[in-house]
Image 1: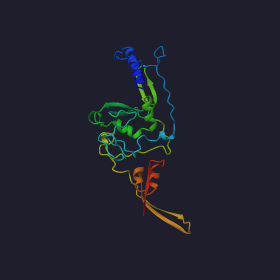
Image 2: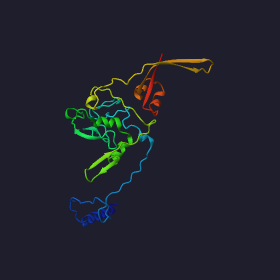
Image 3: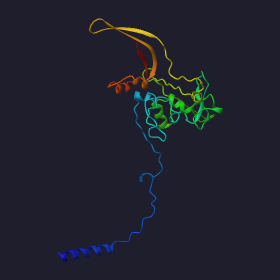
Image 4: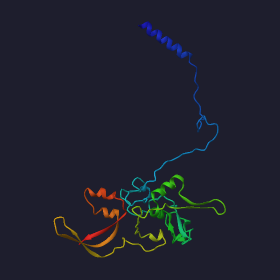
Length: 260
């Protein structure tokens, strides 16, 4: 047994002595394209994306926490425009826009000036803030188009006076349409308007509805002060197992009735 071990040890040492010396490896100039390609070929990528109706809803649903994991963020839902958030979209968040050629086929929001704080003040006073426009107007499909290829271009003139105009997606006027409400005191620094509404307009009225009762006879309900509210505010009046179902229903606003 000892002889066998010594024999194997001798063979191993002899084999190690015959191995060639390998110098330290230097920096390698590795190729950045497949080796079988003889020349440079532009990359071609095809992305197949659905055109689901969900893409035509508003990009910022006012029912999400957009800055939870950002510096200075919180754990609260953003139920309206929040100036500290940079809203992504067709508009530059750090530019102010003016609406030009109103009433014509060439009507559009055109860049007017730059801003460092996303407000339109000083020389930009009375203009639209790009960050605010992104929050108010962008649909999900607009954000996807901007991310993938810069946006849907309706004008892209390179000759003469260069001009590129992006168009928002056509939004169906039924359940996909939306309303936005903002009552901040800085509204004059975000839009050409100076009057802020603290709450959506209330319409005071009273009505009674009489419906058949399954047990016979009728039941009368009297409601008053119907007012338009957002889904977030309406959800506060829904309790129990219905609340998570309520938040998934396909609507953006509701009419809140007060039972008299």
